Length: 270
Image (cartoon, rainbow, N blue to C red; front, side):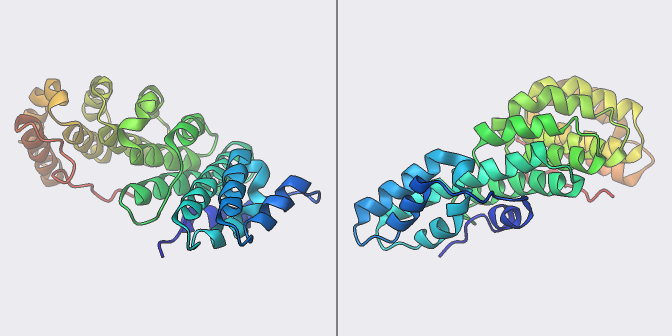
């Protein structure tokens, strides 16, 4: 059986402070219904718990057990419920926690779980509609690790995170080099041509590591980054081998009309 949000749900059940002492009678009843002999009752209980979102987080253990239900419709309802509640959990931590490590962990989990769900490694991940706005807000966090994790996570949502392009472009001028690098790559993964001028500006003005990241971002965008070709050609003759190779790869992706992903090396930075 595929695992459900190992990074996200389990982590956040451990770190979210106080679930509260009082339990709603309806939640208790729905949890009891999850153990009913009648599949229609189990299915409706899972659906109703999912609709309650964060308020039903105490039901997550019972819902996770129900993911293995013998009835396919019950399994689907339980998966959806865990998805909704799990997203609410992580967004709550990201927006409300006073601990920067918890906020960074929540941002990381949102991106990783979404990516793994897209790859079929887990059965369900967070919804872009709920996660992306919270991650955009986290780009302005006072802590650099949170900003960097939020920037990195937004790249996992690819085209569904187009609304994050302005915020990510702003992070190209972040005071922290790692945050700038993460923003470059994520703008590439999102693939929106609006990012091209800001990435060109970065490869012209920033240091070596940011240049490489900006070049890779442009290559990931692909043919829509065609206006960067003159700058990339110039850099393809750069004395630095890494910059030279990155520029040539990006040019290849742009010129051949490829999307760049899988062609441009995602270099390890910091």
